[in-house]
Length: 371
Image 1: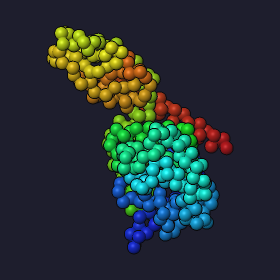
Image 2 (image 1 turned 120 degrees about the vertical axis):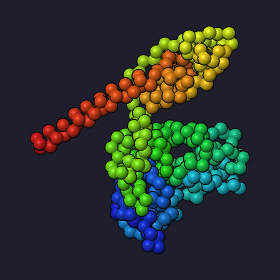
Image 3 (image 1 turned 180 degrees about the horizontal axis):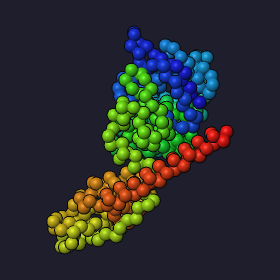
Image 4 (image 1 turned 90 degrees about the vertical axis):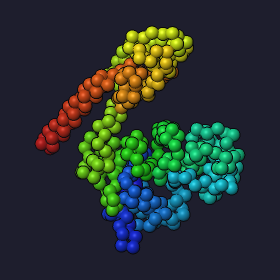
């Protein structure tokens, strides 16, 4: 869909992007990640010619990006930036309608499209008449995404769009983007400096090194399993094994029964070691421990059944009892899992994955020899 062919950008003798050759697949999320000053944002902006390359060629759908006027090219792509970039004097609806209006769509039709997109990005219709200053940071970013989608572009460029909001809102926006991508199937280039965000969102990850060098292009799983060099290994971090658990679901984990205690009985209760304190609906709200008579002890994170081994291990490690609390989709208690159980399951899944990779490699070698 988008192809970089030996693309470089030089500013006054300083190389920002160094002979970048990269294919961005259609209908997938490709994440550009790396430290500050590595050329990832410059590379993104060369796609819609906000920055012109010094040398090399960028093609979109096989067509040279320089073969059409830059303003027309930009209006054919969605663009979301870090601070949303909304026009403060325009309402939410009119902000979203900006590109359709520039493309000649009537005001009524553009506003109707904007109203549809409010629902698509998870905003209520009554926000349409407000101004950006009346919105929270997360709401502004959602409006920015809606504006980028307004003309239904095949390509969406996102330049660190969630870095200016708090971690809770950022997580919500990340989940919203993945939901939108499942529904819409856009070709997305997403820039971030956060490797966790890259691993969560990317179908493909391109790691940039300082000096604008492309250090590695890989799937998230391959990147964590086999960094290409010392730079990539250092950037991904020594805890990449923990991140790698995010690629394994918890299908092999069986929650163990645990003693429970109703919150109303907590003041007078005696527990042997640890018990999970639950509310009237069976949802865990904390722990009761023998050493903390009558006290509700904070319970750490919860692991929702069906999610990842990383979530299960985090729940176990953050729990005061050393056992992670497992809940169903309604938040009701299912049981607990320990760190040892999670690690044993991770070892089993890793060995299984290695056998599968070995089998694929052997089959490929045999096919090559037969050919």
